[in-house]
Figure 1 (cartoon, rainbow, N blue to C red):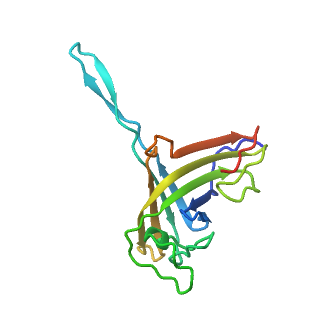
Figure 2 (figure 1 turned 135 degrees about the vertical axis):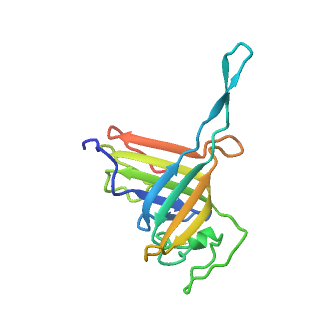
Figure 3 (figure 1 turned 60 degrees about the horizontal axis):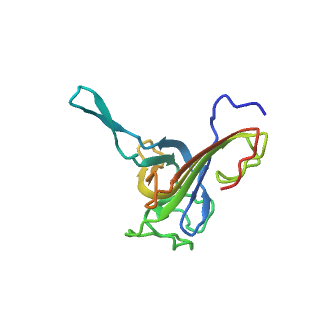
Length: 189
């Protein structure tokens, strides 16, 4: 296949909770924004009028989705119709009518986003066969930090945000970015 000019219109999006239920949420989503944490710093003047660079630790990354929920989302569903139950910290209710209450529980998630021209790849965490192109972002140990429903345009929309530190407490990376140019396969993660 020829290299794509751009990645457009279609993306695969999966979130996995601690159970780990691997949930496809692309059908709910309309936009994706990945605010990769800055690797900033500042210069410090020396007595000789020179400058030394002082690094700041890499900032957290925020992943934002806008989408269209039609329910609070069933915790046992692999294609939930909403994410409110997960934001509220509950993995309990999978019996209609669904209900969730405020909780101090914070669930960790794995968020994976992939663009590919491999029509057979069914999930963002799935494999991409040789001869196809793909770009994948994988974020582990994410917190679901914001869930903001809005009805200002006379359509129920929600903005969902996940936040992840670049490293866990052991210093292991929480963020992996992969791509393949058609000359090899990309394996399932």
